[in-house]
Image: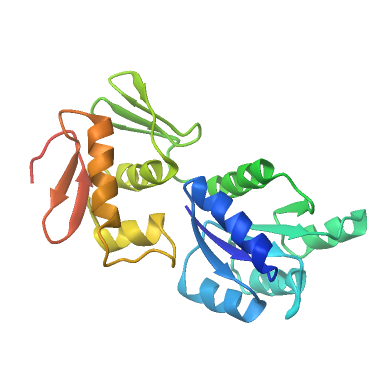
Length: 223
């Protein structure tokens, strides 16, 4: 799941982005509305989190423009404006959720996850590949009925592979879906994570390398 975070307060943006990344989400950051507009133009996001009042303008008016242009990315407003009128204005402009500062980080993460799932309603909640079961709503993974413990990033990679089971997913697609602009695509970060994930999933292996392309999730290694 990929999230755009638009916040001009650098310290707050850093803290929120770190919490979302720790929860297994890929996060792109923008400090103002022009950068947010550019990011939304080039990337499909599962959710966008906007500080309501930015030096470059009111994010509510910006989101209203997105809606008028037919852009349906789920939006959460994160703001100190806490009156009923402010909330009504936020929802009327096309916001899907509204969280007032100060806020609890676990609540923010839960709300962002909920909006991301809303954007992905066409995805089945549970993927089954052989004896492997991936419950995307509860974020549970079982192999032969045994509950496994995965990191947020490991789950993110497995979820993308499961959604395309028996198909090859390129390395670039996995990097784009599960990391953000802070990742270095040329590094071996994906290869290391896949190796760790294979160890946790156990034998027989279900994640297969397609040389020169990427990986495929399948109960067998038939090409």
